[in-house]
Image 1 (cartoon, rainbow, N blue to C red):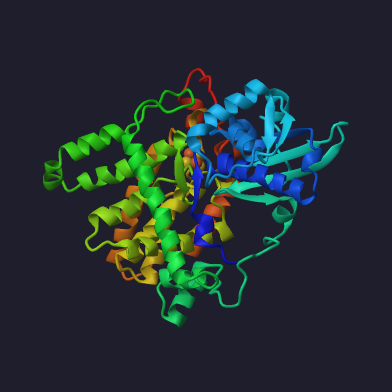
Image 2 (cartoon, rainbow, N blue to C red):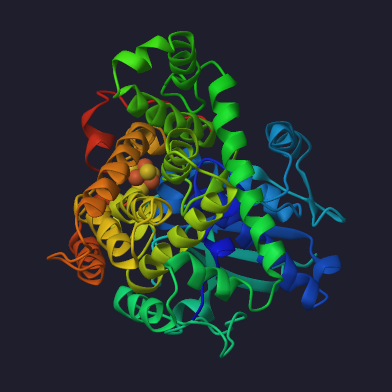
Length: 468
Ligand code: SF4
């Protein structure tokens, strides 16, 4: 199965790919089913229930507002983020919902949108159930969906199938790979770099110039999210009272450029800034690129900014190659382990993003495919076991700083790999398997439930979390 670069890097909204982007897409899928079966006009009531991690931490992750906006026919890629709060307030006040922007129904926020804090659906930790009723109270349509990480959503059929039922990318012209070993063999056989191989795959069905311009569009959104984060001020929403730090750091760094001449490590402060800026935007519900998840959305943009601003001869071609290489590595995690904090802990989110960024930077800095594989392996090896324990169920602490730390780690992993010749002791495939196994052994309280780790040890009294 070929996973596209544009599946792994999609434009979305904060704060969470699995808890915000996924539920919005699930609601849209439910609407599409109602439309397909010509039931929409008969609907008088819709009930949406969130289970598992979505129920436990959905309030802090903005799941309810995402579901409401999805039921109103919005998509993460295009929704006007500045209008969401107001629209949710109107829905609550008027107790009306406009399904797919064309069919108005009564909607009782308390009774029709349920967060099950303790119950889970059997097939996945991020389950959702949508039911539509007619005017007699009879069920018209009932569907279950699962937000499996990175904004990807499966229904009952897809999640029980060993491979997705429909592979829209399937074509013999693709260089298909299921492991790093296969990827390296393909590169060797066809004398391609990893980014060239991925560009070939993306261009099988789409003109290569369009693919390149789409890649730069993804970069543009990333760059804008850094700018937005550097310019926004104030306290992040949700009740933890976490201040935005990026604006002040930006002022400090840009106001004292001489420091960079005396202290070469100032570069790392800039990398920290880029990551903080994106993740603060994400925490505030702003527009970001899911890369490959929202919680870890700052790492790849931060390392790309490092490449663009500090690596000699950086250019747009390099930025495109960066995204393509990162996507090849992300594909390996998606196929063989998980990129979901609810499934394998933070090693699947921040760890995967660190590994993707390390390998991608290595490629654009001239690394061979073997060195890229080595960099990606180092990037994950030293994130193994990383738990997911967001305080208050908000993607703020430890998530924001963790992205900055992983960005620096990715750069270091790349440099370590470039110092060698690509041969190394632990293969990327083995470390991916280890991440998956470690995730399976990890207790559920460390998988995006906010029932363990920092989430229970920092605050003496739980904060009164408001929806963000
Ligand atoms: S701790 Fe990691 S996996 Fe958990 S919400 Fe934060 S970034 Fe995501």
